[in-house]
Each structure stands twice: as structure tokens, then as C-alpha cells.
Image 1: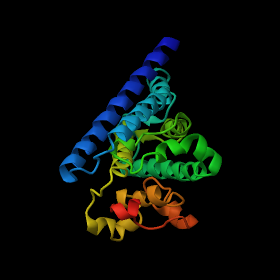
Image 2 (image 1 turned 30 degrees about the vertical axis):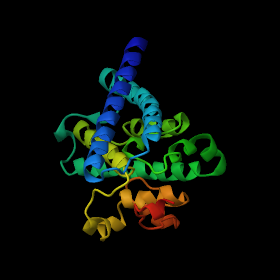
Image 3 (image 1 turned 90 degrees about the vertical axis):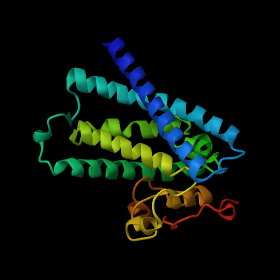
Length: 243
């Protein structure tokens, strides 16, 4: 049993690492095409981001691998494979529930990490990326990586979710994590500056967090930032804004 759990955790860490390299590499390539020269002079920083991110991938993979083994071998979780097990409308609802729960956890742990001691010990690693690049999405100190690694594995014991809906959650998490750090906005202006953008976090919103630090703590939604008075609106990507 111990060997099976070990290999499951190792395999999941490899999967998370490959997913990171493909996603961040893909967005870095898109940046090279859409914003030539944006990452010029940041080669050393990007190598550091990749190093921290691969360490984070290992940490993320361990609880995920243990849970994956428990699901397959012991039926521990509430992950299901039969679409008919719940009403079809529950599929998108479960995705939203997971995103909302993850966003809540992220907001409050992220905000806590901006207190002086946790910031100095752990979160400073992430903010050492100035400006962040597409490779910075998982550039965390191990203590910070651990706080993020437990969320989805914990939720699968609480909230029922179809394996396909879980894949959708992980895909959204990956895309948003990378695109919010890549230094330019991939979503159209009408969305970012319109009513929908008033509630969703995109690169333009998260950029202000990296510029000002004490604001815009959310991951997917601006709800907690708005409720708690920490929403400072949208940033921009000009050299002046980053200075």
C-alpha cells in the first residue's frame, strides 16, 4: 500500500510539473508572438521562476496523488464517474462551487501572507518576480505551495464532483494562474472593462496587485475584494505603472 501511494504521488507530481511546463511554456510562446521583447532581460528571473515552480509541482502532486490513490483503491472521495448520479444541471454548479471555495481560501490565505512575517518567510518568493512572467504562476516558496496544494484534494471529500467537471476546474485554475501573470491581457477590452470584468479577475486586475501589493487578493472573482474593500480596480502594463 505504501509503495502504491508513493508511486501515485510521484506520478501526480510529474503530471503537475508537465502541465505547468506546457501551460506556462505555451503562454510564454504566445507572449513572444503577441508582445515581442516583453520578457527581454528577464532570463535569470524566468529560470528562477521555473525552479520554484517545479518544486511547487512536486508539493502539489503529493496530496493529489494520495487522494487519487484513495479514490481508485478505497473510494474515499466524492468524485463520481456516472453522469446520471446527479442531475445534469449539477455539473456546472459543482464547477462554480469549487471555484468559489478555492477563491475564498485563496483570498484569505493570500491576504494573510501579506502580513510582514508570512510575507518575509514565504510570499516574498512570488513577489520577487517583478514584473511577473508566464513562468511565475507557480513560483512559490514551499510553505506557500503547501497552502495551495491542499485545497482541491480537501474539497473532493466534501463536495461531489464528476471527474470531467474536476478536470474543468483544474483547467480553469491552470489557465487563470498563468494568464494572470503573463504581463498582458488576453481577454477583449469589452469584457475586461465591462460589467463582466467588474466581477472576474483577469491579468489587468491582478497586475495591480503586483504593482501595489496591498490590494486585489482574489484568484477568480472580485467578490471578496469588493466586500472587504481591497479592490483597487484595474492596473495596466506600461513601464510607468511598473516603476
